Amino acid sequence: MQYNFSNRFKNLKPSPAGDILAMMGDPTLIKFSGGNPATDSFPIDKITEFSNEVLTTKPLSVLEYGLTEGYHPLLQEAKKFLNRDGNVVRDDDMMICTSGSQQIADCLAKVVCNEGDTVLTEDPSFLGVLDSIRSNGANLVGVKMEDDGIDLSDLEEKLQIKPTPKFIYVIPNFQNPTGITMSLEKRKAVYELCKKYGVLILEDNPYGQLRFSGEAVPPIKSFDEEGIVIYAASFSKIIAPGIRVACAVGKPEIIGAIKQVKFLNDVHSTTWSQVICERILATCDMDAQIEKLKEIYGAKNKVMQDEMAKNFHPSVKYTKPEGGMFVWVTLPDGVDMMKFVGEALENKVALVPGTAFLADTSMPCQSFRMNFSTPSTEDIIKGIEILGKLTYKHCK
Image (cartoon, rainbow, N blue to C red; front, top):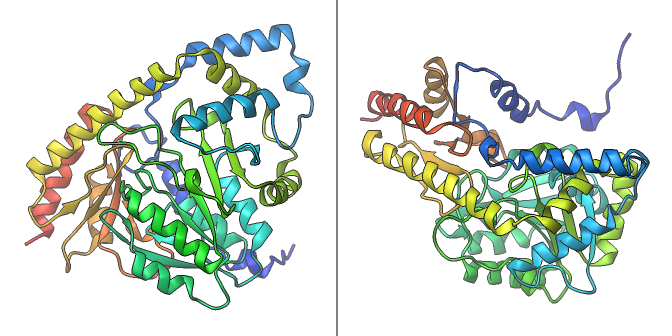
């Protein structure tokens, strides 16, 4: 049989995300490549308890079809939870539940992008969303990053692209892959610039609750008076990733359109997961759960930072995140990053090449991403020692 694939599909490149997930199953690897939450943070007892309860007392409520916008009690609890961070969900906003926050980006691209339209993104940024936007025929244009977030001069230049970009994708808190947090001043400036040029903002905040040092910074959505911000909130990182529960927040016109596209995509997100998520938010001590996460990630990050300071060649630069899961490591000019990552894998240490996170993956890159939430403390120490020796081999 001769299969005739669409031009849109033929233009897609295989996503590195699949290779990363495949590597996670190899027990012999030290996995700095993942983006998984620490498994010892999962509230397994509560998930089991609530699952047994709902399947025993009202099984049809989770086994029948549900509503596209989501389970209403969950949306009510999610609104209360998200507003802990400020005025994120306003009374005139609409919320829907999605199957992870990546689905929000996919649906938004379907709603607002025609073939060849421009979408701006921090450069680098989360590869899953970048691939999703590409799959909808949009042209990604990267905006440079600085130590305190996006480069505002570069952003204004890119906002003037004609035709006007449809939206910009940002991860202000502990960005994936760099671990950088956007400053309050830059959040306000990004909002004002996008308002000036009439460009939507997709603000993705999967890591915001995982701050283990420094002061919290309000979301961009909290000072949106124009309805230009679509806020993506995920419960994967504070409950468990396998439940695939996230929420999209914004004005009814745009969220209603996303809901319509979502219906065509999967009808509705899994009701069981939504019910479990609602029960956890409504009845569990979320402050204690988040404090547990902060302790785990803060401790692991400290080990990784201490070991890199001790073992890495002085010419190697790396970020020092105040939360989240990731560190961005940059090798000096002249070092072949792909060769370095390949040698690390030969030595059983898995990294993700920085090129995977670029808007234009053909551009040169000296960086790679490391994750500290997935590996054990022992593996962090062992893996950094291996990488340290490689830095002295490659860096002069």
